Image (cartoon, rainbow, N blue to C red; front, side, top):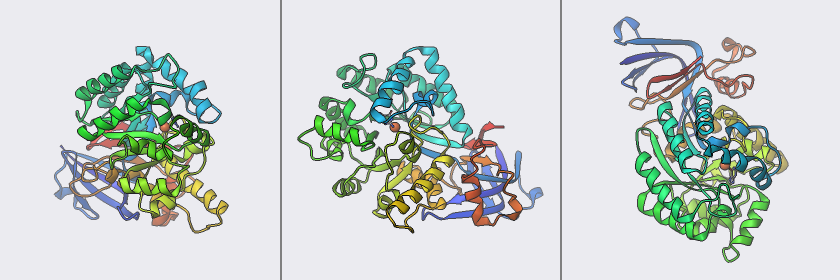
Length: 423
Ligand code: GUN
Ligand code: FE
């Protein structure tokens, strides 16, 4: 099947720039980009379908590096800081995922919304029940999203209704991974929820599995001040939070660390040395009053930084929103620190949520931007009526799209060249 797609393409590059392909044609053959052309004679091109998106904006499918499937129904509802919020809102909600139909309905709703916002690749937590994790994989697989999913591991400091048996949950990991790891577009991720929810025995075992089986690992790190203090109490002989994960060999180039707000220079250095990936979650960091991560400092230090919506710490599944928030909080930080030039620009934030994230997930040969030979994962958006497209300069298009907060739903979304959503 050959598809011809026309529109205004915003093409993020590895060097944090964004190329505008205004009124271009992409020819897609069997899901892959075969040609990128400005002027073509339509009569001379062989295609089966022509999607003329006119003056709509087409971007690569976005990549969410950190979010929670079961928490979607709590988006925007809870209050309080991290540890109370988990106890009062999140654990009770995740407990309901032991009901099969609730789990299925909620998971379908999550993926429907995720795709509608233009996200085509996501790294996610399921609910902590084995069955809920399997349901997440089944529905992700049907949705066609490139889905990296982990069963959150929690064998201590967890309400009785959710707490896992250490030995049993290790068996569950192997059983789920056997069925779903690298099946179609799905991948299993080792997921110690955070240091506070795991015994040392469990962390040790997960570190061993990570080493031998080369899985991605995801966890939370230094998100909230009280959490950091609590980690100090629970692991008194380990010098800092980052070293807790390092002690158990959990810091690798395939480790995704969400939040990373309260890190000292040694910890930043360690994460750099281990070449881990940081998932910056600015919306969640505001909502839970966690703090502001120093994104520019980390990026300039050479760390791998991507973006995550962290729903329901974050209240919005849109990665355009997350990219905007990353820019906005960096402005607050720059003013507070009197470093007025040290802000994250829209172009950088857009690259973090597309091509850079693809590089970190080691899939930039396949997706992340528009290049010949890559798969066509894309989302099509209409600009707001307040921005007349004819009056915008090319370098204003990205901001007009990113700051269009009235409606962040895509008009159309493609994965592997297949139309998976349209409105
Ligand atoms: N730390 C441990 N669990 C969670 C969670 O579900 N959300 C966030 N934001 N932080 C966590
Ligand atoms: Fe999270």
